[in-house]
Length: 310
Image 1 (cartoon, rainbow, N blue to C red):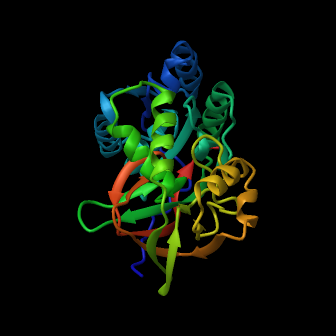
Image 2 (image 1 turned 45 degrees about the horizontal axis):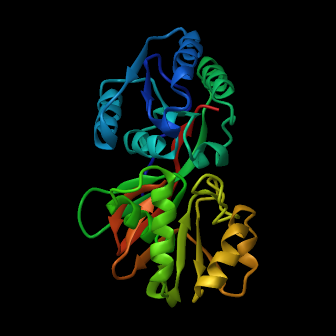
């Protein structure tokens, strides 16, 4: 396995604070809160540079540019999708990173210890910056057959949930959460187990499965604890596989994912590894809720790849 070296940066420099803002996070419900959050962040007594962009690719480019131009820290104001874009810029750089959770899903922020209240999170980020304090956490490095590597902080979905996301993204109607609900119904009607090949630290497992998730953190989808024992500081990835579920069993088990008790079901298997090679036909992975790469992919745990302001 190729080692990935992450530079050590124990204290933040005095460069400007770059703030990635997603005004549409949580469908705009927290837009009026943004001025108050920026006012709290300004208490750090250094320049605050607000980054806005149309779409995910633009946000990612803005973050990369800010880091390249010497940002002393980067803060993401949004949900897991906004965090995912920001992580592409800070991963492996040592640039301190903070999250103000105002999204529909805030799993990375919750699982790494940021306050759930965004104003309290802003105060925590400011306190960490003033003290020169960061806490290292692992990230997952994702590579596929082509293209640049991607990073994720929470969970890679590579089974039924990824298929539902792919269906929902192709639909033009209805709008909002109902589109996702309809996509679930359509894919439930088509539900079938697929053949997966997992190579975990070199050990091969051939499995038929409906659910497959690779977790750096425990949760995805706004609090579903799909990988309940995942720890973003242990240098390992948790892999949870739900086997040959039929429709009725899957829908009966799904609510237990919020509690993390689904792992007790006899059709669920759990693994832990530093490196995961995942192969299946016709699957596009979703990491931190964002569309990433078609399988096959390799996921590698990278210790201390991010330095959090908390």
